[in-house]
Image (cartoon, rainbow, N blue to C red; front, top):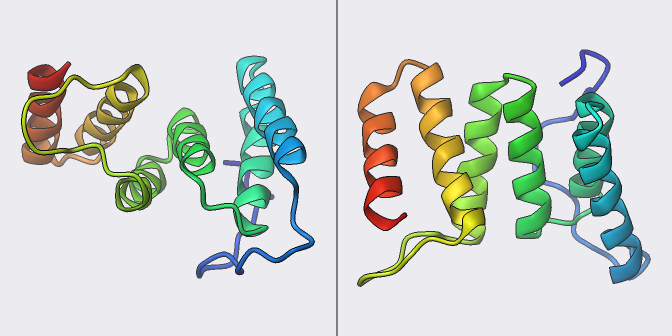
Length: 134
């Protein structure tokens, strides 16, 4: 992300009644997608972080933060976002299942981040899960 973006540590504040409605939230998510698609990763990242700090800890916002940090090459931060996303919306389930495109992307992001951080054992495990259930 940009060096101008300073996000204080800690958890986002609890969502209150004055927060965005569903339409406003969807508009911001669409804006994040369009900005990222057009190459404005820093701007999209600022919007995603602001949405998260406003109290939106949905799977969509967590995934957007992870993807944008991945695009910025901030592997550790992307991995931290993916871990938060895994706690909020776990991918792994018992029994046989097939990953959706979104879940497959999450596994790829995790494997690539682990590889870039030099954690080859974790990267192998993530690739194994990706191949087994893909």
